Length: 623
Image (tube, rainbow, N blue to C red; front, side, top):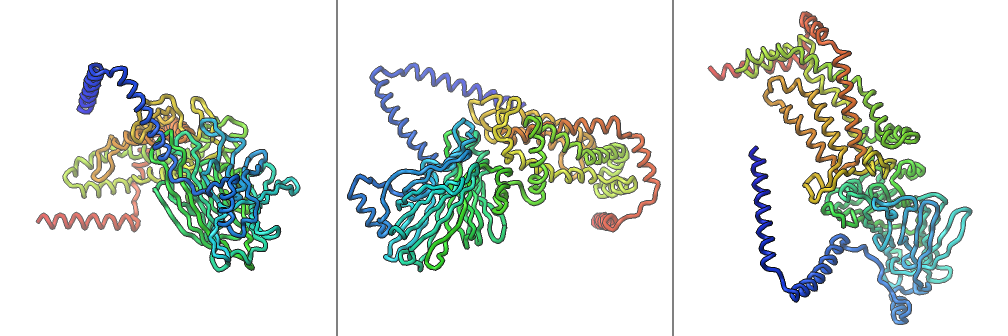
C-alpha cells in the first residue's frame, strides 16, 4: 500500500513539474528571428548527433585496403613501387559475380576476396535481404614478407579474375601475378544449390619471391550484421565457435566485451550470427590460431547495426617454398538439415544444441521429431502436438510427484501434532518427523526426484526453440515469428529487464505456471514452515514473475511450449487426483506400512546417531 502511495505522489510530482515547464515555455516564447536561429542551430546539432550515433553503432571499421585512383598515373606508380614484383598484375577495379539458386557472391579484384555474400532465399525481420558480407564489414587477407624485404598484405594487391566452368560448377581464379607463370592464386569453386564453396590458396613460382624465413599469416576479420528484431536476443546466440585439438568444439564468450583465445590444430572457425553463419574450414588444419570476439551491443537499440566483431590470425606453412592450402567457405543458414550435408567437415557441431546429454537430446530427439511434425502440420500446431506428446511421455513422472504430495497430505495431521508437541525443541521435532516418514514408508524427497528427471528435457527444449532454424519467421496466431518474441502492445518507454513491448505468450505461460505452482506447492504452504526450508509462498509468486520478465524477449515458440506444457500438466494432475489416486487407500496403505518393522539403512542410522549426539550435547551444555 505504501508503494502505491509513493507511486501516486511521484506521478503528481511529475505532472506539477511538467505544468510548471509548460507555463515557463509559454511565458518565454522566442521571437521569429530567434526561431530561425534555433532551427539552424538544431540542424547543426542533429547532424553532429547523427554522425556520433553512426560512429557509436559502427565502431572501429574493419581494416580495408587503401583506395587507389587508377586514373592517376602517380598513384598507380606509387602502388607498383610499394608492391614490388606484384606490380606486374594489371591494376583494375571491379568485382566478379558468383551465384546459384541459394547464394550470391561478389569477389573484388582488389584483394581477391569476397566483398558481398547475400542469401537469396531469406530476409531479415524488416524484409531486407540477409547479408553476411556487405559494405566492408569483413576482410580476408594474407600477410607475408618478400625476398626484397617488403611486408605485403593481399588486401592491398590487385588480382586478375578468370571465370570458367568445371562441369556444372563455376570456378573463379583470382591471380596476383609476378609474371605470367608466377602468381599467388585464390581459387573459388561454387556448386549448384550449395552454400559451401571450395577455396584454394596456392602459389606458383614464388619460392624466390616470398621470404620463406618469415611466417605467412592468414587474417580473417568480420563484424556480424544485425538480422533480428531484438539485437540483444540475437547477440545472445551470436558466437565464435571452432573445432580444435582433435575434434573438440569450443566457443568464445557471447557476453563479455572482449574474449581472446589461442588454440592448436584448428579444423574450422564459425563466425555465427544466430541463424546464419560464415565458416572457414581447412583440409590441412591450422597449427595454431589466435581468435578474438568483441561485443558491440550495449543496449536494445533499434539503430544498432552490428552485434560482434570477430578476428582470427593463423600462420600458413610453405611446402617447398610454395603455398598450397585447400579450404572451404560456408555462407548460409545455421540449419542442421543444411550443415549435416557436410558431415566430413562436421559443420553441424557449430550449432548450439546445448551441453552434454542436453545437447544430445536436442539434436537427435527434438530437432528431428519437430522436423517430422512440421512437415505436415502448421508450425505452431506442431509445437502444441510435440508438447502434448512430451507431457504424455512424462506423465508417469508427474504421477510419482503427485503421489508423493498425496502421501504428505495424509500425514499432515500427524506432522502437525509432532510440531505442536516439540515446538520448543527443533532437533527432537526433526527426529520424530523422520521416524514417522520411515515408519510410513514416505520420503519427503521423493517429490523432488521426478522434477530432477525432467531437467534434461527442460534444458534441451530451452536450447531448441531459440536455435531451431525451422521456427525462423514462422507465424502462429498473433506471433509473427516463433523464433522471436510476439508483440501485442508497444510501450512508449523501456522497462529494465522487461523491454519496450508486451508479449502475450509469456503472460499466458506465467498464469499457467502460477496455477501449477498453486497445485504443487499448496500442501507445502499449508504445512508449518520448517527452519531452513525455502518459503514456498514466496517461490510460488516469484516463479511466474520471473517467467514474465525473462521470457518477454525470448522466442515466442518457447513461451507457447511452456504455456501448453503447464496446461497439460494441470489437467493430468487433476485427472490423477480425481480419477486415479484414492487418498483413503493411500492412508490405509500408510497405516499398514507403519505396522511393519522397518530396518534402517546405513544412511538413516548415521543420520539418527548424529541427531542423537547433537541432542545429547545440547542437554549437556544446558547443565
